[in-house]
Image: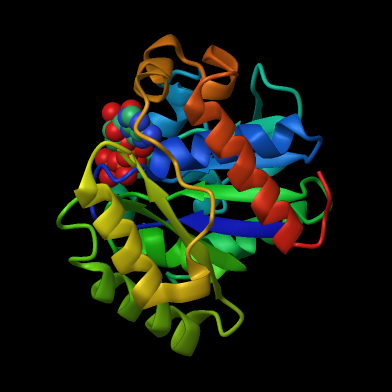
Length: 256
Ligand SMILES: Nc1ncnc2c1ncn2[C@@H]1O[C@H](COP(=O)(O)OP(=O)(O)OP(=O)(O)O)[C@@H](O)[C@H]1O
Ligand SMILES: [Mg+2]
C-alpha cells in the first residue's frame, strides 16, 4: 500500500482537484483507492459526491482513534474508490491535537490497520502546515506537490520543502518527494511556460511530465459532485489526470 499526501500550504493551487482526480484515475485502472479528506473545507468529499451530515463519521474520528478506517470508509459511486470524509469536528482537530503527546502520529497509527485493504491512500491536505498536514506527512510514503502555473507559484515553496525536511528528520525518515505536478497550465500564456520552466530548473526530474491544463470542465465538475473523469472523460483535464496516474504507476513499477 502506498500513501501519498497532496500538499501545498498555498491555497487554491489544485490540491483537492488533484487528490480527487488522481484517486479516480487510479481507481479507473483497477487500483483500490482510499481518498482521505483531511481538509475541514471538505471539498474532496463533495468532489466525489459525498456531502457532510452531522452524524457522519470520517477522517476526524479515524485520526483520533475513535473508530477504524473500515468502519467509516464510504464507498463512492466510483468502483474501487472509497472516501474518508471531512467530518464536522475536523475543524477543531488542530487545536485538540496540540494538547496530545505523539500528536503528529495519530493518522499513521490509524492507517496501520488497513494495510491490506487498499493499494493507494491519497490524502488531500488543508492549505496550512499545521498538525493535520504533519499527521499526513508522518503517515505517508511520499508527498506530491501541485504547483499552479502562475506568477507567485514558487513563493512559499521553500517553506513547504523545509517542512518536508523537518518531517523527514523528526517524524518520518522514509518520506519521499513523489513529485511536483504543474496545474492550471494555460498554453496561450507565456507566463505558464515560464513557471513550468522555472520549476524544472529548480526541481529537475521531480517535475512530472504530465501537466494539468486549465480546463473549464475541471472546474465545473465539482458542482455536479463528480470528478472530471466522470463528468467529461474526454476533456483535456481528464486526459491529463489519466496521464499523471499512468506516470505515477510506471514510477511505482506497475503497468496500468
Ligand atoms: N486544471 C484546472 N482547470 C480549471 N480550474 C481548476 C483546475 N484545477 C483546479 N481548478 C479550480 O481552481 C480552484 C482551486 O482548486 P482546488 O480546490 O483543487 O485547490 P486547493 O489547492 O485544494 O485549494 P485549497 O487550498 O482551498 O484547499 C477550484 O475552483 C478548482 O475547480
Ligand atoms: Mg483543497
